[in-house]
Image (cartoon, rainbow, N blue to C red; front, side):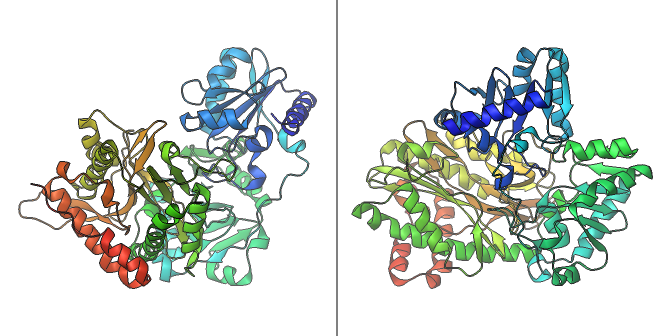
Length: 599
């Protein structure tokens, strides 16, 4: 632990004494409970040095612990002084268990803006079991000792017209409002910035990888919205776009608005998995009846309309051209030497940035060579980046935000001649990918019910992968969205037409190499056949980029699988060839050449 982090820990402990607290929770969350958080909310990193995407610390006067999931067991020990913050597994040895053993009769403080009601209930039980108490802090103790804390982002919000959105905000608001009325609630509190962006047909730039504006909203059953936002982000043009049924209000008016609902005995809906405990408590204290239910914008947002799907198709064509230029550039660059994981990722981003529609990446690029490819959420840093060398596999998982769509694609390529084992593993991953891509299923089927298709070829060889097979993707919004997914984990949400989801099976050999093949697909209605009794659905593949033929062992593929691959490659070549330079075109033609059918 650096002297700087030691001083920060000591300062926080002194502040806990001042606030009469025996312990304090430092989560990796902001007021919106989202995936990406702005610099001013990076409290866990400021205190501990840990920069992973999932974690929480507990600080007491004489000890502290940090909890991370399995992706970060190595990273946490590299970034954090484990003598000061003892590492624990977030799932196997959660902070509630640790608190029950260590808190005693102490007072555990928490920031009610940074925890959901569900979180608070768990911590209350842990404190009770330990003999202590849980205390909501009026002011975050860590913020009091963070002297150079960055200011909150204040990028302007902008209109997102129906040419891209495909539906007016008024229409969306009425649709969701009808659902609220059917549920017999008077209003819903919206805290997810992507839901607000979708509902109001706006976009922003408050987060690095997602084009949203950090804000809150109240949607009423008549379709009116009170939008609570930094007023500096809203100009007159945007107010005109919003119309007179959207009332723009300063952020500090949220509390009084919630109290007004409570004072008038309104029934207000919140999503307990993503709403700050502060909001829940404010409503209840004021007298509101709080109804807990999933975010009512999540499902309609996930079911893209034809305009959004057309935009996603167009974005994937241009993105595929950029990725293809990168894949064509890579072999000669590696042969010349000097290419690292970081410089390769930078080169791929440079190709994408030639597109005038691009606004940024959709997540930090994962570029892993050799054993780093086996780290599922690996992120190369300049000081630790591995050089790309002949004989290794290189996995690159990347995506971008374009004004007409969001992309997320993974390709694994052989740098030199792959081994027989690598070809076998890659081909099994490909077989699973094809099985999912070609699946036909009846209406009402969930992602967890089709997950087995992507794993079966690996299971046959006694292999598997330890992440989900697919996540939802927004339309120029979050690269990860629900409520649908494809995973072993149970999920009751049925796949519906218009939903976009990733198809990304993989295989990872620890300290060896990693393999993942990821395309985005959209759910659509399949052709009606004689005798069918239920509506049939299928996937349309959106992503267009070559799959490395050098890694394919055609002898274990069926004729049907090879036909799919050859048809996919023919489509890739036909679509992208007009968009790339001659040298890339020559490479692309060879990279998508047909593979002979199995005997």
